[in-house]
Image (tube, helix red, strand yellow):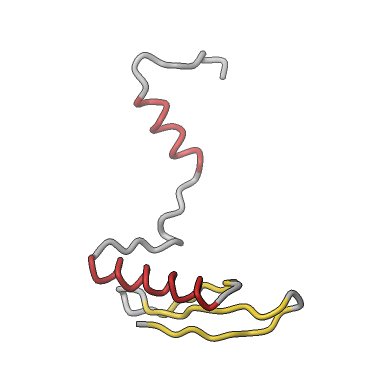
Length: 84
C-alpha cells in the first residue's frame, strides 16, 4: 500500500503519494492537484506491483539516441537519407 499526504504551495494545496517499490525502497510522486488523482495513481501502482508489471520510472528512462539508433536499424530498407 502507500500513503497520501497534502502540502501547501503558492498555487494551493497539492498531494504527495509515497509507496514502496518491489525492491523495498521508498519513493514518492508529488504534485497531484486533487485527492482523487493521487488515489488513482496509488491504486494503479499497487495493482501493477501485484501483477508483477511495475516498471520503475527512473529505470525506464532511455536516452533518445539509444532509442533512435535501434529504431533506425530496424527499418528495412532505410526510410531516410544518410544525410539525415
